[in-house]
Amino acid sequence: MSGKCQICGKEKSSGFMLSHSHIRTKRSWKPNIQKIRALIDGTPQRIKVCTRCLKAGKVKRAI
Image (cartoon, rainbow, N blue to C red; front, side, top):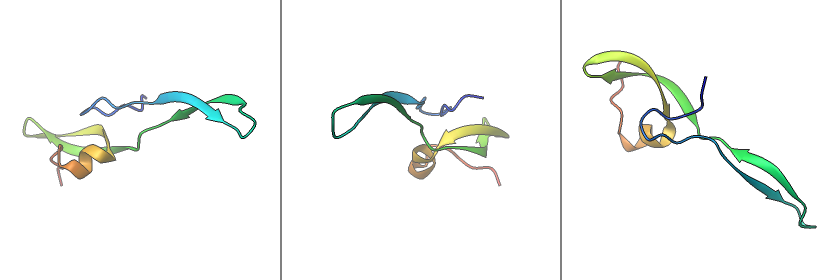
């Protein structure tokens, strides 16, 4: 199960945590992915969408 938005393709990114003494350790940022029922070509389907796409109205929710 991937943490990837099926609309915009946003996924986990990685980088470093930087301490005060400049010691770098690996860390990751994950997008806020929600499973929703959306209308895809007129039929309701379950898809994984980031909250930014939901808020922007890029997805039509099925109720």
